[in-house]
Amino acid sequence: MTSEIEAKAAFDHIRYAQLWEDADVLTQGLGDCAGGMLVSICSAGDNALAMLTLDPAKVVVVDLSPAQIACLKLRIGAFQNLSHAEFVELMGARPSTRRKILLSKALEGVDEEIRAFWSALRDDVEKVGAGGVGKFERYFRIFRTRLLPLVHSAKTLDDIFVSRTSADRQTFYDTRFNTWRWRLLLNVFFSRFVMGRMGRDKAFFDHVEGSPAQHVARRIYHAAVATDPAQNPYLHWIIKGKHGEALPMTWREEHFETIKSRLDRIEIRPGSLEAFVSTGEKADGFNLSDIFEYMSPEVFAKVYESILNASAPKARLVYWNMMAPRRVPAAFAASVTTLSEVEGEGKAIDKAFFYSDFVVEEVKE
Ligand SMILES: C[S@@+](CC[C@H](N)C(=O)[O-])C[C@H]1O[C@@H](n2cnc3c(N)ncnc32)[C@H](O)[C@@H]1O
Image (cartoon, rainbow, N blue to C red):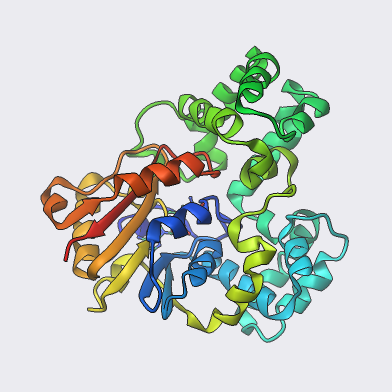
């Protein structure tokens, strides 16, 4: 089966240089996977690596984009060759003046093609970190450096990350953050036109309903008031261009050695998920990112069916929707159980705040 989006979007450079989906929520959603075979969309690779903390026998990683696979291969080299402190410097979470050196060190022993790919990006890596060189991160950088200063002072932006009670977060949001200038900025920057031009391929909006700006405003409320910004690495990167104290799961020191010791369980299969599901293998869990949103409802139903055929009993399908609604198609509703409680727990803590829905569906025995 070929993938619908394969024909539409250009995948020639890095779109996502870090993963903008919360791996804490993903791993919680996948549940007990010890000894099982998991499948993950690669994207920047962070979440496939986070899945190693679940102690699976194997994580099969697929992606249509060679550039995204190159992000995972860099991380594998970095885990092998760098200390944790060096790793977070290279990625851009922490300030650094030696990223070119760290990049060369991370690429030692990595295949020639990947070394050449990353060497061509070394100036950018030096400036913004390996986690900052994607098209999506560039979009956030333009927002941060050119537009945000027109709306908020540096002091207000720093103050977002002071830890507060939820009542005080509401007051801060109402009185200092959600100003008319801020609302104007959201409406312009998150218009379909600008997002399509700078962040996401226009093809990705074909199936999206509603205004992206309205959606973003609701989700920012979740990140700024419902949850604590001081604990939110994604919001921090968008506003400050690096991480603060809080890091995404895969980049946290507590998981570094576990992930490093299990890197040999990652099996990279460049190509589509649709190709994987036709091999006859049965997986115990899937990280499907938000790929369904990129498909028409008809194609989504076909792909969903093929995933069910490639699932072991009790396998969980975990995925997000950013704007387009996607849940088990009616035709297959009897084959899965929606784990609403697990979804609710995930949504409440989801720090990657852009998504409107988080889905966990378990295949019946
Ligand atoms: C769906 S995008 C979303 C990115 C995400 N929200 C993030 O934070 O990284 C993630 C990846 O899925 C890949 N992708 C999309 N459709 C796919 C498919 N049918 N099979 C394999 N990979 C796919 C893209 O190449 C991209 O690297």
